[in-house]
Length: 242
Image (tube, rainbow, N blue to C red; front, side):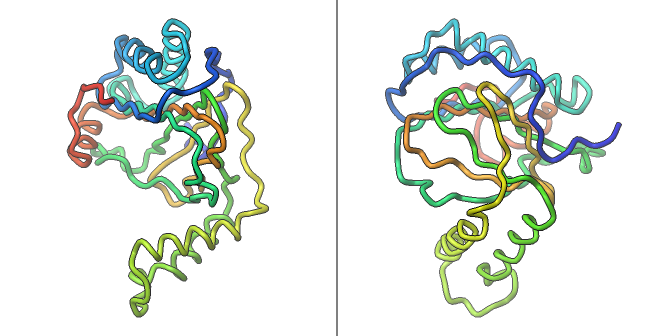
């Protein structure tokens, strides 16, 4: 089987629940086995921080999990665990300037799985969708040039900025470089799959948060991989965090 491309839109869109506003900013996280209780807990959570109805949200989350786990590369054991996150945000100016970046490695790979294309899946329930650039060599080259230019620790430049200042300088530089680049078009209810931890992983950013937003992502791995992720992040396996 040929490797999955670094970015794709799944063929069947997901039904989006009726949802018009958020009550407060909040984040839901779960690291653990894929289980039926997941949709129940996620829908119960969203009903407390948005105006969505639990049954509608549960149906959406169930459909999202089924579609993405089916699409994910690997045997049943290699994708029986997941990291599901739901981000609920209010309007802010935090991403007026895009934060163009690639997602790095998420967990320690099982032996023999180092070269597998690992992916994250994203679905927007409310508000603007993630900004994503069409993956190509020029985009990746621009990111590399930007990092070489601004990250003094990569090239042994004299230290002129703090690391935070260097990241801010790169962010501003990439915003100019990518201002007119073609972006991936993601429609209503469409799930976008994008790889992480690879040189050709898509360059993407949070959108400008001008309105309320509800955003769901999931990635899959084996139990040992997700437990390794929990160790890296100092979080508990099989626990709903919100």
